[in-house]
Image (cartoon, rainbow, N blue to C red):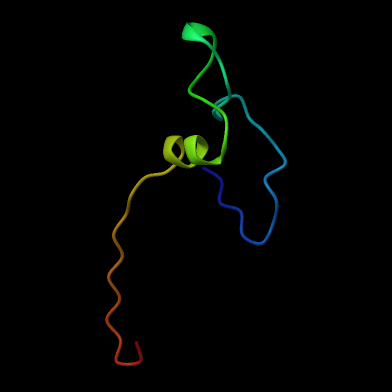
Length: 51
């Protein structure tokens, strides 16, 4: 898994989403499709008197 902070995402590996019709591709291209395909929801709980 890759996490980029303060850098661009101008690279691609084979498992990243891209456009295709029927069985020719994995998912669709674009930011919203990529975010959904490559994200896992997590829960973080922070207890702080400062917040």
